[in-house]
Each structure stands twice: as C-alpha cells, then as structure tokens.
Picture 1 (cartoon, rainbow, N blue to C red):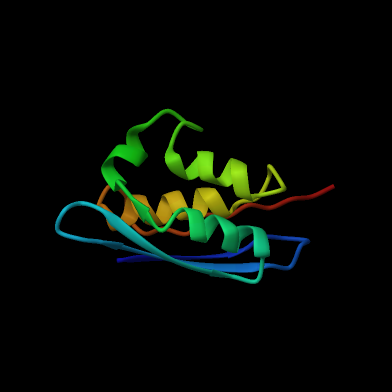
Picture 2 (spheres, one colour):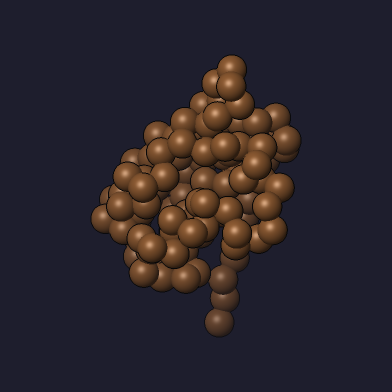
Length: 104
C-alpha cells in the first residue's frame, strides 16, 4: 500500500490518494479530495493495471487520459501524485517525498 497527499497550490484543494496492490497486480485507488474535478477523476479511475500503466510513455496511460477528461487545469499535480502512489504500491519505487517550489 502507498499513500500520497497533495496540497495543490493556490486553489487550496487537498487530495489524499491510497493505492493498494492485490495478488493479480491490479492497484485499487481510494482518492478523496476537496476538488470536484479530482473527485470526477476518482470516479473514472478506481483501479489501475499498475505495471502496465507505469511503463507506458508519458501521457499515454489510462490515468492521464482520464485526467484529460476530468481535470480543468493542465498544471494540476494530482495525476502525477496518483502515478507515484501506483509506482510505490507496485514496488517499483521507494516512498520518497516530492517537492516543488514556485517563485516569481
């Protein structure tokens, strides 16, 4: 199991992602968010073929296709956080924090 928490920025929305790998290598996602668009994504993308999704070229996974249909802001960090949770749940990455600093 892996968890990620995203504080997305100026929108103020917080998203929690839990990714659980089962014996058939499928990852079940439990996503909760203050953002209605992320919750629409959560409805459309509840389970992942973890290993397949991780190794597809950037932007070609079912996750990013679902995000394209649900999210309104192309810079939203939530899809990447979901992918990182899937990657960790599948044992393909160590659980490490990611940081982004935005300045003007």
